[in-house]
Image (cartoon, rainbow, N blue to C red; front, side, top):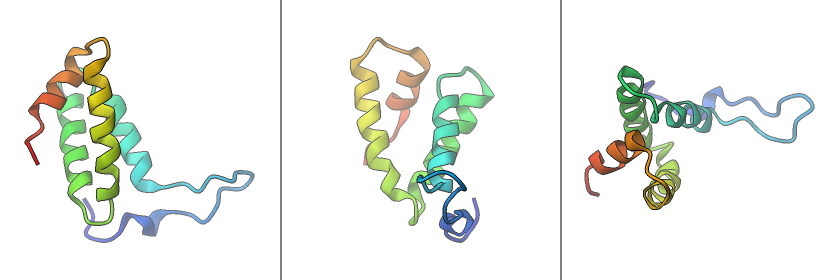
Length: 91
């Protein structure tokens, strides 16, 4: 990961949209989509998310991930998501 704040890549406002893009959230979204895939994609997504969540400028995303993980564990099991959630080290 880059050694400076990811917000430096955020553009003010996309033309015709009231939503401001957030680089950190876009990275998180892509990584979360790959957690349910088998193989290298899942491993890379897990590493990317762990590095994203320990960054000082993006650590605010960790709380949402923990809440989502608790929901995933309560729903119909998705084998790959359960593996990732159970392999997370305790805080």
